[in-house]
Image (cartoon, rainbow, N blue to C red; front, side, top):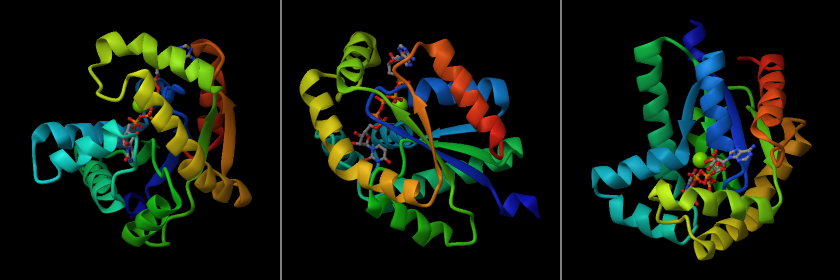
Length: 198
Ligand code: UP5
Ligand code: MG
């Protein structure tokens, strides 16, 4: 049953690198299912369940939410999307953000699944800040302010880069320069996804 072997691509990069924007294009134009770990956490916070306050405090501090919570939400969203659309190609946006995130994923999905390709969006801090501050007026996100962006960037450097390095050593990283304009970035993303297992 091919549905038992979903195809997963991880999409990583700094805060505001354009992960969500490009994943939406890939969903609309190439039929991928876009799952943003951050969006799933924000929805869970909004739903007001037992983890809502904990999620809020991690997000405003730019820290990484305990992986049990995140991977549970991703798995549930994958199952729901699969049963409603029948499609099993997933772009997992903003995850894994740390070595712990990756071992948590493996703990849940086991080693049956091939190591996902990681699409890595490279973008300098100054551009990230400009993008996020441009979005801040209408995003309604509690972490869209200069102070939180710096915290997010710091977490990205200290915790996320090590997992990117692990994937790089496995030969699983595809680099994208996401500081370019949307049209050019999309061209590169599309080529990377078509070359992969979309
Ligand atoms: N924009 C996009 N592309 C552009 C381009 N090429 N040229 C010019 N402008 C461009 O884009 C950001 C802005 O830039 C938008 O206004 C866009 O129009 C413009 P977007 O596509 O939103 O970028 P993205 O990379 O998705 O930025 P985001 O802010 O979502 O990234 P983060 O990684 O910071 O946020 P995320 O939602 O993934 O995580 C938020 C928090 O949740 C984390 O800090 C953490 O606390 C928590 N979290 C976890 O704990 N665990 C997880 O697994 C995931 C999240
Ligand atoms: Mg995003």
